Length: 124
Image 1 (tube, one colour):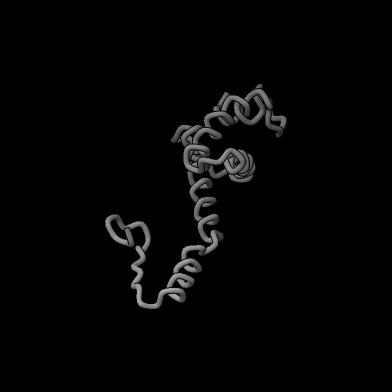
Image 2: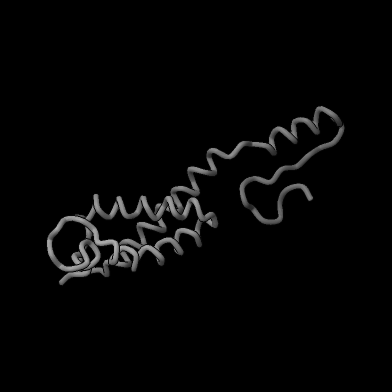
């Protein structure tokens, strides 16, 4: 029995449906990996579900030369990072609004802003 058949149907038979018993064994570590990246339980749950769907859709792309769990763990981390990127784009630019308001109130004050995550730069 291959790791894929064990995880996919739990018994080694080709039923084509995942077994709740086998998925529960791997869902905890996948959730933990997603939570470690995202730090939000709701997002980690969403990513875990997305990963299970991706596994089902891309099962034929799995390369058996590598460990099955390593493959799905990498999918989990990648999906978590993708969600972080999407959420960053949606974040409102409150800093821009606050800086513009401060400049309008006190035009003689120069305000420096940091660019990105560079350490040691920006207003203190």
